[in-house]
Length: 192
Image 1 (tube, rainbow, N blue to C red):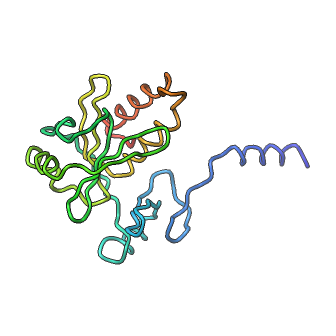
Image 2 (image 1 turned 90 degrees about the vertical axis):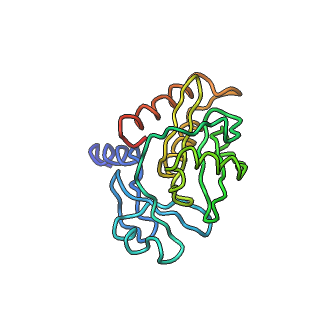
Image 3 (image 1 turned 30 degrees about the horizontal axis):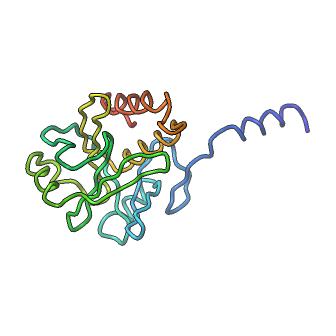
């Protein structure tokens, strides 16, 4: 094998695999849409035409909205969050579920319906949370006080960031800076 061919092969192997649409397999760019499959709540990367074609009302796929809004009026403690970092989603019937990052992935528990109703009353934008596809993201770690309405993909990105940074029993030195960087990008208006 010639030197140039070997270098190209090594370079190609080092490059991350290009993502493709989970519905039609067309290659996707770095920034792309997502849909949620109602059958198992899995998230799929999607091209814009598939989001429009298979969007809400046309089967079991739901487009994941892109809005990110900083919220006031809801306190994590009022929702029974036993940890300082969690995201909340709602089902079609309005039942809320909380999930928090752990070294094993997202751990979750049901939210008390009365507590969720109080949170929605205190923070009206939560009443417009789109089922399964949007989340209330809460960070109260290390004196932080952040609450965001975000695409559910952001909650899963945070879980992935914590999992990748976690070392040992307590998480190690890399977890806190990773969480802080995640929320800094969110505050700057970027995709975390």
